[in-house]
Image 1 (cartoon, helix red, strand yellow):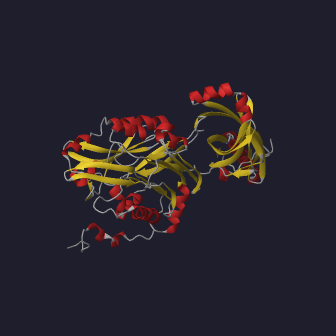
Image 2 (cartoon, helix red, strand yellow):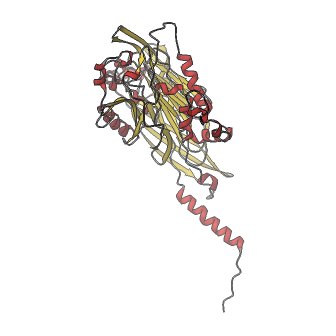
Image 3 (cartoon, one colour):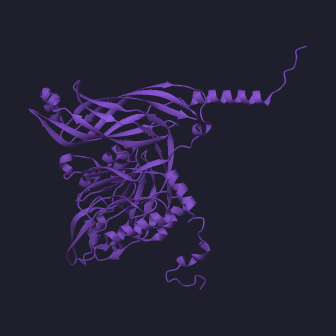
Length: 528
């Protein structure tokens, strides 16, 4: 008779741990870090007779998609043109947290001699406005898990298409090969089970409108001011003064900068016609269904995989609304919001055209995807312009789960008072909403002078732009000026902001039982 083996909890636990570790190794196959060249900014020229050498700053987007932090040593990024070494950029040693991205600004020197020796090819590329650059980089480092450092080497080949006139990055293809040297099969359970990161990048667009719908829909994709922000810090800034010359696309440009949600200004299809009370302007309203601008933006959103709130003048049988439809990243119409607060004053006579909105404030859940994972973000069916002056509206949306507030806007000078400039007041009010609710806030406004014939003569408004993005404490992260077209882009970690919002206690300590007076217009006792 065989001797019965004595059961050992220690042996069982060791065996279970070994099986679990093996499962982790099988399920946690490391993924390549990615390197994307975002922009090339020439900083100076040096004469090395008979050619000019250039010094430039390369902005590179680096992503670590793995559950372990990485450290890497010094290396060099090489840039080639037509097979010859055009220049190089040193990459200093550094580190990258797990499941994160960052922008590196690398100083580079480009050889004018190499371009001169390939003058024929370069001239042809200038004529086509497309120049193919090849960049390579070898990075060695370690990925630390528990007490062990796992060595790795990554070789990245990038084929980048650049506009040789303005050095815009048009497109690129990246190939990488990762070698990982495992020093221990054990993985940290807390890292393997790390919650999916909910990092979202938002963009606000700003431009001057013409009174032609097709031109404005086209311009809703053209940029002149680019601001890139990571961890609430501006890391790059560039002005462009002629959108037709540059031929940039605002929405596409924002997408290239990593934007997931792109906000376009209020009623961007034409002039802000509410300066006048003219029945002819009702012809600008169209039903939501089969609306040509909405259909166009649905195709664009699906193509780029971005969310776009679209402002439009809505006709619904005999009613008319100032409305926004939120288009999801797959092109789906997520729902309609109709402006709740309708202004009526000199230059802003909206009550003549718009019924008060009847949708209430709604929170929409949007789903954004990267190459490997599916992340959920919460947003809301945008407030519109005059809504932004009411703290009750902002609070109502955040109470329902909104994690970012968006306000498409059309605001500028006051026709009845040339000395009244509300831009700073306008910004401070919304910064207060962000800080009071501990959520980021995005506001998009138009620029330019618009003249409308009214029943009393001509009326003119100079729209003051100043589109901005505020952080969750109301701090200004990005702010456009009052003259230039702009794209503002900022990145937020929604989970970190959520933790800050919960720990601050403002929603824990609310007293709704004391706020019933808010249901009245005159502050009287609601029971009377």
